[in-house]
Length: 210
Image (cartoon, rainbow, N blue to C red; front, side, top):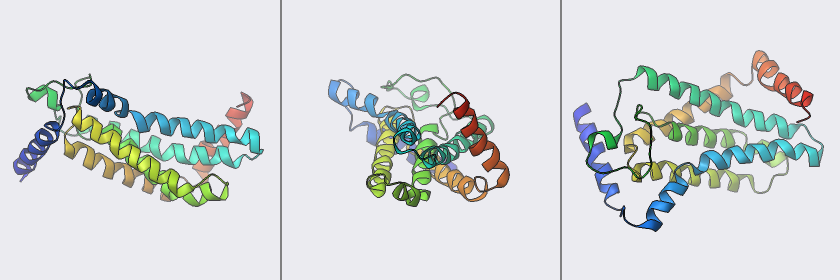
């Protein structure tokens, strides 16, 4: 069964790669541009959200930024753990003839950290969409939809680039959704985490006038 799944995964990767012309400057540039896009845009969004308190005099923007930040951190920690304990899966460029469009260290291909990040950030935004709406941010559902689409484009760009298999990103995205949901449901509401992960971080930032 596992061999069948792996063979299908490789066939799907090859099919997707056939859509890409490695000699096309436009295609290669787009893939490289989107390969990390959601990661940086989401980080920028959190920074903007954090500093909105300066203009609106409301610390709830800082709290929401932290609440969106921590589930993604937990998901990344889980990813690092899984990459260290799961059987090593070479990246496609290490076992195939085509050259990757993006350089990457030869670490474990499964699961994709970018996919886990995309799933976790999307779940975080979805779980806190009512808070986004309450803080008068423009079109909260459009914000969620934007990041969901950008995240999907990002992770598929990494498949087109030849540095991940489709199964890497599919499983990674599901892991990101699950870990973010569980952390929001069971970790963030605890008194201990609210004290350390939220209030302490707020005081630490206030000390440095942030």
